[in-house]
Length: 80
Image (cartoon, rainbow, N blue to C red; front, side, top):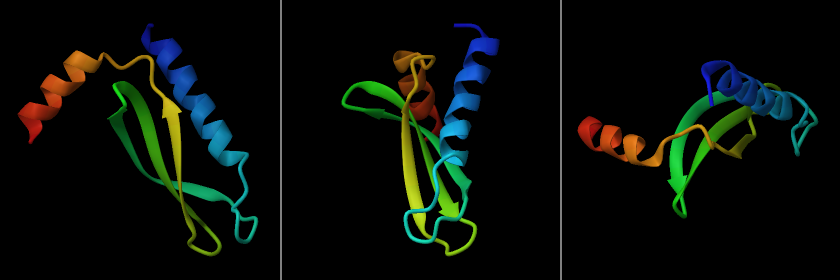
């Protein structure tokens, strides 16, 4: 997967977030924190969002097939 494909993939994640109204008030979510995480052996983009109206927090989890799990684990170990 090249960088253009990765950017399109991430843009589609933000489209989902932007098209999802707040469960509480119907407002729009704003991305607060984006992390890469390994869940059950698979890489995911985990985006924590906050409603701009009421402050309700929601976490969106997207598959991240563009992440090399082995490289990610090595990098994460050096950062901790």
